[in-house]
Amino acid sequence: MNPRIHPDTVLITGASSGIGAMYARRLAAQGHDLILVARQQNKLDALATDLQQHHAVRVEVMPADLTLPDDRSRIEQRLRGDDAINMLINNAGMSVSGGNAQADPDTVEAMIALNVTAPTRLVRAMLPRLLSQARGTIVNVSSVLALAPERFGGSYAATKSYLLSFSQALQREVAGHGVRIQVVLPGVVRTDIWERAGSSLDRFPADMVMEVDELVDAALAGLNQGELVTIPSLPDLGEWDAINEARRALLPKLSLRHAAERYRSDISEDA
Ligand SMILES: NC(=O)c1ccc[n+]([C@@H]2O[C@H](COP(=O)([O-])OP(=O)(O)OC[C@H]3O[C@@H](n4cnc5c(N)ncnc54)[C@H](OP(=O)(O)O)[C@@H]3O)[C@@H](O)[C@H]2O)c1
Image (cartoon, rainbow, N blue to C red; front, side):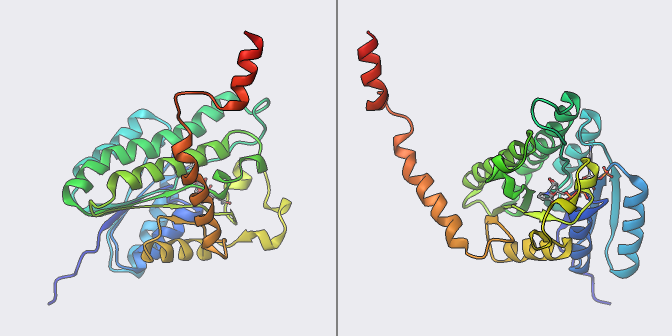
């Protein structure tokens, strides 16, 4: 009997529905063993049973509320110590309805804990092991709102900008060390996140809404193609490259000994 070749075990956060559940389906079909994390154990169990029935993979569930330090730390410990886990999909996320003057501050704090603190801590737990093994993959699920904060009130977009910025810093840190970091920027995707935040997908024209299987397939294709930043809807990746080139051109000018001329004339007039 041939021994089964074990591809990397993948830990997926937010695997009980939407994008995370679709990642689980696609990665199980590729033969990956999985660890599924989310709060709703019944949904995780049902998905695990289904995947194990259809694919020769092991699927473990780890129910956890990633806004709670004790729960989060159980996942961190597992990522730190389990050499079989070589891929992390930081997907769990939530949105909050209402602008910065209206949104419930405790819910906003929970969103920051889930969208910002949790992925940061999970990466911190796992990255030293990946670097020492010189292999592994981390996928951070951000949003196109990272590039368009003015399109959506409140602070959700800012949490997704953090994930983009965090991923870009990580990419620089791991370059040449055998570890891949991909950040995915979905547009509007048909999942429960909208209803959960008290919103509705009906507010968008149908041609702005991507189905979840297409989104995940595109994200995985981007990963296979070695993309660092995957924007599944964007037809011409050259437009993203142009923004980055313009941004890089600013870098030598952003920290100088003296204020720019336009401010110095004001300062000398007032003096
Ligand atoms: N759908 C979109 O239009 C869209 C666009 C851009 C980016 N995104 C991003 O895509 C990611 C996935 O969202 P989705 O659209 O698939 O939404 P979703 O269907 O609502 O899924 C969110 C997942 O996160 C889990 N989750 C929520 N709160 C949690 C907590 N406190 N602790 C642990 N897990 C928690 C949920 O499971 P439990 O309830 O079982 O905990 C669920 O599995 C998010 O990061 C989201 O910001 C979505």
